[in-house]
Image 1: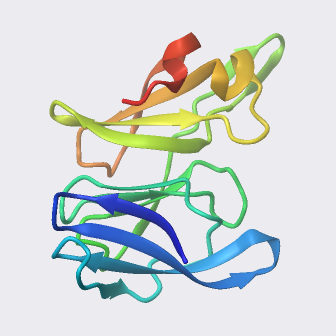
Image 2: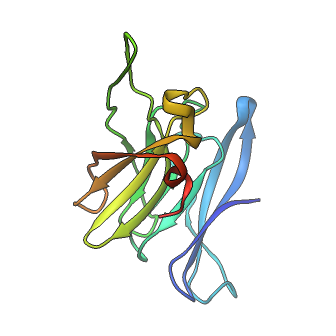
Length: 171
């Protein structure tokens, strides 16, 4: 069962296939790739994540080598996502830097769920939502965070809040 796909160009497509399921929505995946537009597929990685993940929100391959899988690890919205720079042969688990905000007398870190990654000029941009429990400034429908990376997605810095109608426009 294919849960996420990312098309690099007319011929190269990556797909994550669910191969095993466990209690609590935990899923184990294999990564496949086609180099000929889908006529033939080959396995790239039999177990791309060192642990199970829940169903991925999105998968992006910006080039044949550089890709990201946005999914909560083990059902926790904790700002975790996965990055590859070798075409999916290996993935590195990364975390979004948690940025504290104040609402009333409380300080908390609402932005924990990566939603989208795209390239803009010479940097990568990631929009980050609040996860299932977010209610900061109206939750994901009212406010997202934007992070940027200038090193191909190794590190990310908070850039700005995206509020109102712009919060749900694609990059």
